[in-house]
Length: 249
Image 1 (tube, rainbow, N blue to C red):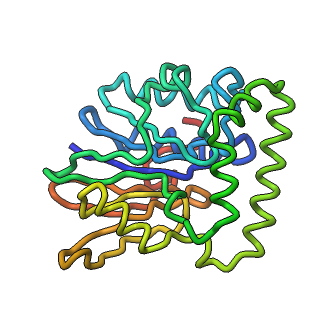
Image 2: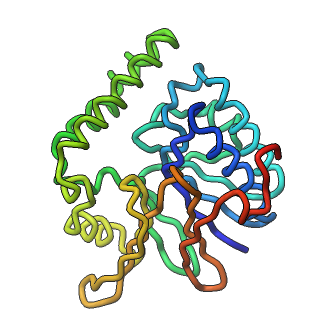
């Protein structure tokens, strides 16, 4: 059996190829008995369970069909889809997972996070995150019409892109001290997260013992996943051809 971890797909109508790639990944890479963890930002924007966009419904149906094949699915909120709730879970077949969460993999505790709370040097982002995750902001967004929510999401995407251009890259990465603090607090030696789009496996020493941080890649140009099987973790990258799929599938 394989346990797979993905994040930061940012699926949207403007990038249909990545939706097709996810479909191929679910159908050809996963087998009954496997487990998939989606660690946030599955969609470019999730406007609420009552505002599913036309391009998002097929994704939910594909996930539901995947769960129906005996594959266990978990979903953790990211900074783009934090409004996903019980109806999203029911329609997708994904079990909602808190951030952070500790799972057991290979007989050891592993910490899962979206990763944005580790970017503590980006003070502007942390202020934004605190605001949008507040109950008041969520209630405000859900009180808007769908067109108003679409406009609001577009505004925040534009602001995020503008602010990112003006920041040094290291400011937007995770803070190592925050990483170590989180790992100590949860008594783990392995941490898996997304958000930064900087796919890598970092090995370091934590309190005199080996530790690992796995950073999941984004799905802008190709697909990527971290897979655990037979005692080993490995990063895999793929496109439609390597999965044996085709655009019309």
